[in-house]
Amino acid sequence: MKNIILCGFMGCGKTTVGENLKKKSGMNLIDTDAYIEETEGMTISKIFEKYGESYFRDLEYKACKELSKKSGIIISTGGGALTFQRNVDVLKENGTIVLIDVPLEVLKERLKNDTTRPLLQRPDKDKAMKELYEKRMPLYKNASDVVINGDNSPLKVASDILN
Ligand code: S3P
Image (tube, rainbow, N blue to C red):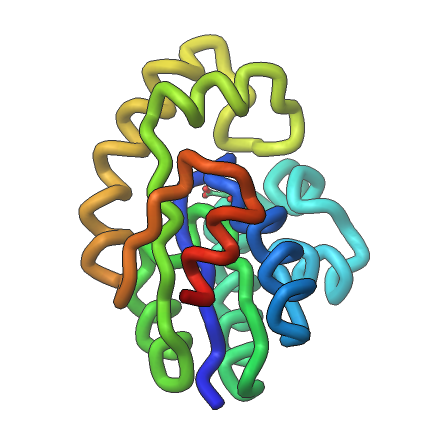
């Protein structure tokens, strides 16, 4: 059975939608960020701070490769994961990629007080989010097999994915 891969920008709800999907479907859920934090014994923020982004991207690729060997699970990815073709390639081998599509203005509101995402800890956060969003959306769309409207409750988004 194929995996369900959740894809989308930071704050689109991949983790909470994943938890709702897990409850509804009985499938296991693994979050790539949680997997990396567990295997490295360090938070994502600490990994960025100590080793930098490209080191994190290599860990993310390793996680995608490992997790793609499983089947019938939900894989919730970090917001940058599916902007790298090498991750798309391994995850697609045994998975359907679902983009949770949320408008930029909604994401800005959801992330305005966030302190956990290293890429957003900067004074020009709104501008940085806009640039990243515009750069990433076409990549997400290209990578995904299905696009779901994510501007709804996590429960509704999870039902839409299962349907
Ligand atoms: C990132 C998103 C984060 C995490 C890391 C980098 C990104 O995951 O992987 O901070 O590049 O968009 P979430 O999308 O779960 O916040």
